[in-house]
Image 1 (cartoon, helix red, strand yellow):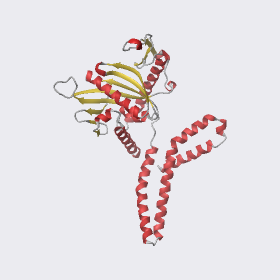
Image 2 (cartoon, rainbow, N blue to C red):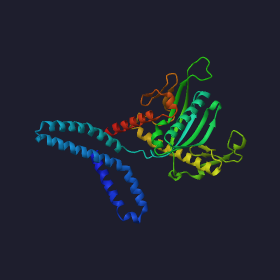
Image 3 (cartoon, rainbow, N blue to C red):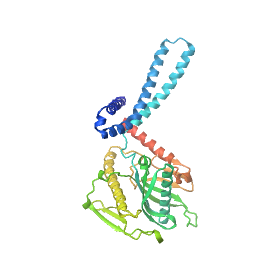
Image 4 (cartoon, rainbow, N blue to C red):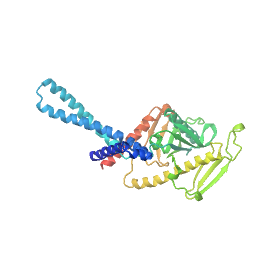
Length: 357
C-alpha cells in the first residue's frame, strides 16, 4: 500500500510543477487536465500526510520514553502514545479505501427506469410509490429530475416511468438500486385483510453525457414519431412530437414524449439509448469479472430480487447485505441515506477483502 501512496505523492508533485510551469500558458487544456487530476488525488495526499505526521509523532514519543525519567511526563507521553496507536489503524483503513479503484461512472447523472412487475394493479401502484420515493430523495439532495417517458395506470399507478436525475454523485448513490423490489401489504381492494406480494423492477443507468462515447450507427436505428398522449384540453400535443427509437441489432426500444419539441425528445431518447447500450457493454465486462469473484452486494441485474418492503411490519430489508430499516414511512418519503450508506460500506469492505486476497 505504501508503495502506491508514494507513487501518488510523486504524481501530485509532478502535477503541481506542471501547473506552475510555462506549459500551462501555451496549452490551456493542460491546465484543465492537471487541475482535474489533482482534485482526484488531493484527498489521498492530504490523508497520507496526516498519517505520516502521526506515525512520526509515535516514533518520537517511543524514543523519548527511553530516556524520560519524570513520572508525570511519562504518564502524559503514554496517554498520547495510546491515542496515536488508536488513530493510526483508522487512518490506514481510510487510506486503503481512498486507494480502491474508482468507478468511472460515480460522478455521472443517471437515467432510472421503473416498471410494474408481478401483481397487476398493485404492482403498478408500487411502481408509483417507488417513483415518489426516488423523487423525494432527489429533492433532499437538491438534484434535478426530469421525466422522459411515463405510462400511467388507474388509481395513480404506473405501468412504466423513465426519468433522469442530474446531480453530482447521483450514480454513486443510486447504482445499487437496480433489481427487483418486492412489496408485501394489504391492498385497499382486499376485503379479507390478506397480505399480497407484488414486485416492480428498477434499472439505474449512468447517463452518457456525450453520445459519441457509444458507437451508434444511424443505419441501425428505426425512428418513429407519434402524437404524445395527454389528459386532454389545452395541454394535449397536437403534433407528432413524441419519438420512439428502435436499435435494430439489440432490439432495444426507447421513447420520449415529455418535451413539445420533436428535436428535444429525439435528443433525450438518443441519450437514453446510449446509456442502455453503454450499460450493456459494462454488463459484459462485469460478467467476466464475476467469473473470478462476485461482490455479494449484487450484480445490478434487474432480475435479481434485492429488497422487500413489508408494510405490516413497517420494515425494509435489503437481501444482498441482510440489512433492515424499520422507518418504512420515512424511507418511502425519500430518507434512503441509511440504506444507501450501508450498501456503499458493504461494497467497500468487499473490495478491500478482494484486494487483500
